[in-house]
Length: 265
Ligand SMILES: [Zn+2]
Image 1 (cartoon, rainbow, N blue to C red):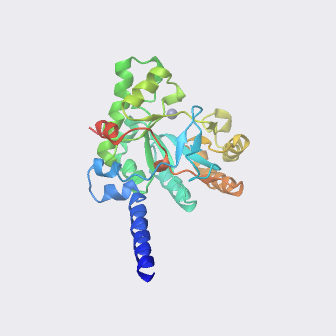
Image 2 (tube, helix red, strand yellow):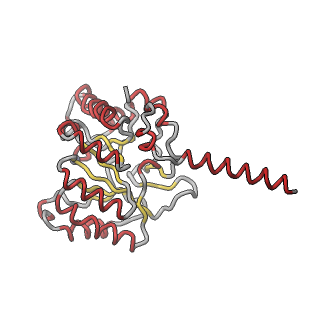
Image 3 (tube, rainbow, N blue to C red):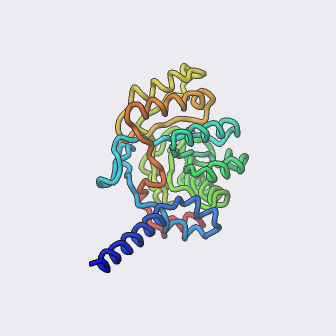
């Protein structure tokens, strides 16, 4: 009897250790200097999937449906803004996707390093901020591939998520992103922080999000001073409304490790 429970205990300990290893953040693995292929196999078990309307849905019963995905587009621009966003995200225990443009990442490689070191997810927002739906197939593919290459070099891991500039993609760009092993998304809530009437009005950014709030929301924000100013209040309001924050590393991209490795080349 004692022996049996000792074996059960041992089995539980082994299972726990396996789970612990599984949930180690990919960034911690990258810091150890292991190759990208080793990082991919240690990614957490996916908890959310993206719907056709770019909302996040829990996979099975493992995750809470009352949660939102935070995203910041068009950076990295400015160290003080990035540091403040990171401070507020850490304060609320939240992770986000930073959809970066290649030309900005090239200008500020240290900010890509900073985002990565703080466990945030870096997404691909094309090299230039141009309308890819109007670009040739070769140009659109280059716009995506060059960001994969640069971020792969800077962060040791190419992005898993793609958002087209202006949300303008269509079936052709979706196909190109998929071929590069990327999960394509636009958003389900626009904070409207980019609109002129909301400039320098953080309270309106908060209201715009809260007015549209729904489970699994995919919230589009930008690296802008008034959004930085709004973020602490916004995250507090979301928490008060009973919402959690989705860790992008737990989103299923549908890509196999092999497909992702090919994008890292
Ligand atoms: Zn953008």
